Length: 375
Ligand SMILES: Cc1cc2nc3c(=O)[nH]c(=O)nc-3n(C[C@H](O)[C@H](O)[C@H](O)COP(=O)(O)OP(=O)(O)OC[C@H]3O[C@@H](n4cnc5c(N)ncnc54)[C@H](O)[C@@H]3O)c2cc1C
View 1: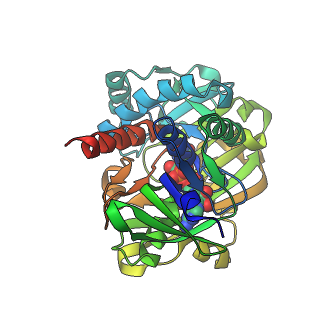
View 2: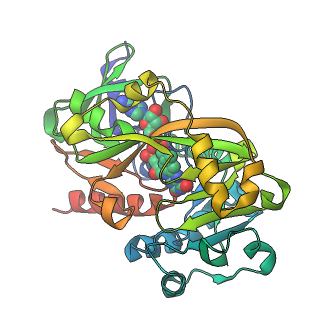
């Protein structure tokens, strides 16, 4: 058991994914004692690793202009801040399906209005697609990130800013403490921390933390998602391909494994649930689920649009719970969720929707600090 002074800290961040690690380093630039608690034995092992590794540049969201614009702006910042983690060695192709929810002309208009570079693809790329299913094909400027390299950079940032990192440690509950501070209990050992402020960056476990702390749940939707990794045939190796906009798919480099990944709108989610009507501990649910790969369905459908994909080989499949705000089921937007003073003073909840909108999250945190420091 550590002594009391050792457990009194300025800020405690729960969750050592990309969001929690970045937030902890950000806070430590302004505060003396910042602690980051992560239940796994390493940083960035959950959604920050198991995702499609796309650094969004806005192309993906033609039906949500705000998300498209924010992505476009955050893209440049992210690429500049994490140059070592970026894979820009491939060409990202966006193809518009004939029964897409947007036309090719609308897609181009949105890209131009947010300043995202776009041009009609050259014939060698167009020839890869089934022309009776695809209206038009474009070359764009979008990259992938390497999650292993992002983890390395996060570790360095935490070390440089003096954050105390506790791995293999789970926050079991939070409660209100005296003088506006927050009491945080961690396992194993039942240790109690008293923090001036607490930020939860627990993504798919956000409602589990609230549930276990006796606080009201947020209206979140969870999907048990599969990301198969594949080896693609030579003509596709230097490409990422995204078919817009509807129940289609994308295949793109997954730099941390030197493979490609496929995400299919219809087959990547195996099932979903809404926390308000059907609460589950998302991690426990994933551990206990016996899911069989949907890879065959994904590749059979994808090969209708890009016939060469028939020659792809599955090398692995990664599974994770994807958590999104219920309000974005309609417009496909991906804003962050930030709730300050949630259920008690100085407890903030942060739910990242995409890796690169970390900047929106840091802005929200800074505004929060400003408001609190005003008389
Ligand atoms: C299938 C899928 C595809 C995606 N594709 C993309 C994409 O291509 N591009 C993109 O930008 N975004 C994508 N995303 C979204 C992106 O992955 C997330 O927005 C981002 O990773 C969230 O980061 P995070 O740090 O909040 O979450 P996580 O990386 O999940 O971190 C949460 C951390 O909290 C820890 N934790 C949880 N509960 C506790 C507790 N009680 N105590 C201590 N620690 C705890 C967990 O162990 C975990 O490390 C995708 C997500 C999924 C699931």
